[in-house]
Amino acid sequence: MSKTLVAYFSASGSTARVAKELAQAAGADLYEIKPAVPYTRADLNWMDKKSRSSVEMNDKSSRPALADRDANITAYDTILLGFPIWWYVAPTIVNTFLESYDFSGKRIVLFATSGGSGFGKTVAELKPSVAADAVLIEGKILNGRQTSTSLKAWTDTIL
Image 1 (cartoon, rainbow, N blue to C red):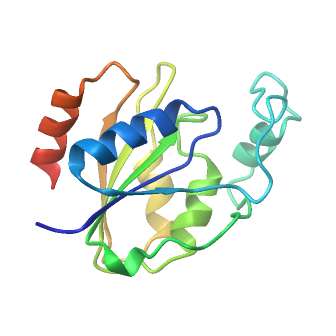
Image 2 (cartoon, rainbow, N blue to C red):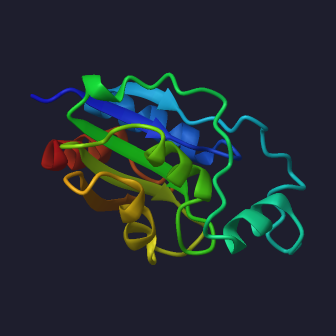
């Protein structure tokens, strides 16, 4: 069995809850992707075109700084990477995370939380941020309605 890491970014706590359940179901280690400057409620107001999240998501080159670079990616074969869907893709801080480490030869399986949309163009938007030989897989939208049994069944199929 390969060594697995659940790495996640969560702005409001929803993705964090799912990531913790997923790590437990998979018997995986857990790592939180934290921004150097935490997001406030005002930052996350997608209805305000001047909010931090709106500005970042409108600029494809935006790379919010990370609080740390302590993930020991070399120790893992598979990374389950989670995040909320923002504007039909992953938040740009996920690109920052992917560009901060060497994912050569790694399997990266995505999972996300979303208020209603699917993955959209997430894989295409993230692919340039990882090594050419990294395998990036669109996983599942997990919105908290899953059970520990269903999470275990899913992880058994992907790990």
